[in-house]
Length: 248
Image (cartoon, rainbow, N blue to C red; front, side):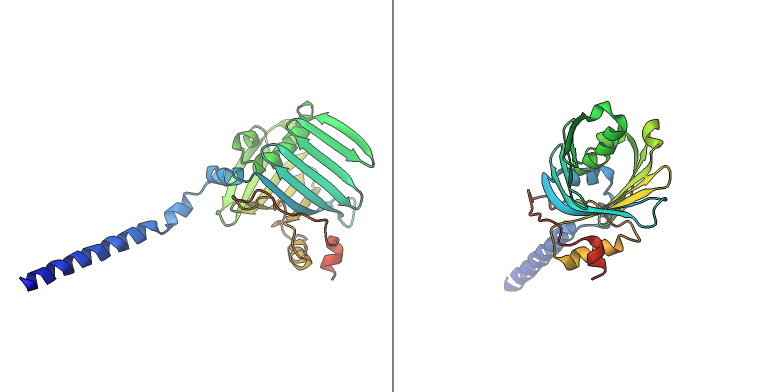
């Protein structure tokens, strides 16, 4: 009787162990789950971010100039439709778009525009705002959208479908990781291009490393994603210009 009871207990223990191992295996992420990640999943992740703040360094490469034009400042995104860009160097400028209204201030002069009255401007605004808010329909209104890479390192390629926009812009490429946009490059139809490097408010050393790499590759740009649970972050003025940091 005792021997039979021991056998039964052993079988029960073995079954319980196998059952626990099975549950543990099911709980682990599989390669299939990662491979199932696609453009729709990316848009969902990006759309979870409600507010983000960052600093930027932008370089514009023009064929008529030997060295790029450089500017720096701060960016603020507030879901679902407000995007602010404040240039601090070399001269103060601001661009704030909220819904369909764009307010611009350059050299003390202010101007207010209805972006839908300017199709090319509207398309450009939506390339950035649509990505930040995870609005695929807004992107597809103006662009052929293609996604390369994985969730850990992806690139979103936007090719204008409207003739007027295509006559000016060849492609816009945005790079990122998970819900964080970390790079944007704009290639114009005439060959000129710009690269914007954007980071969270971080020590000079961190900004220096990423910004200097931006001179040679496009893993640069919009670091506005933040974490899904984060609702805001601190942003101070740039610590130093990009040229000062790279030469430090």
